[in-house]
Amino acid sequence: MIELHCPHCGPRNVSEFRHVGERHFRPDPGTTDPDEWRAYLYLRDNPAGWTDETWLHRAGCRRYLVVERHTVTNAVRAVRDAGDASSADVTHARAGDVQPGTTDSSA
Ligand SMILES: [Zn+2]
Image (tube, rainbow, N blue to C red; front, side):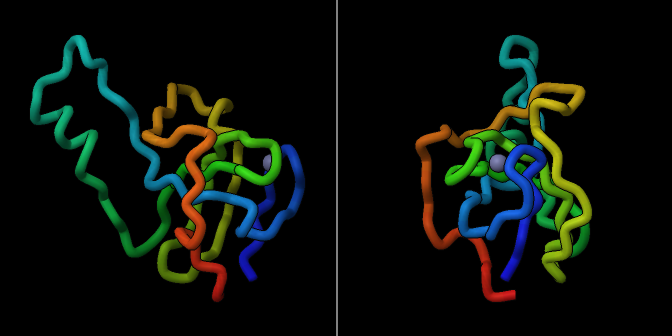
């Protein structure tokens, strides 16, 4: 069982969360060029190691969280509210989007 420690709700089973994806920042649509916009929409780093990801606590506080997770071991070393970040974290997901089965709870 994977457990995430939500900063608002405490330790919870990962089944309460929705994995949104790698954390990335939206460029300003008024000043960006097509290549940068395409990279924002489609390109991800997909590292085999530590990465910052956006997760939604869909069955809890319904807040977006930033999770530092190791993609090979599923170890989690930090969870914080996405609103605490210094810059805007824009995701493609809406709070109503639920995609069961997108997380791995077998570890
Ligand atoms: Zn929560």
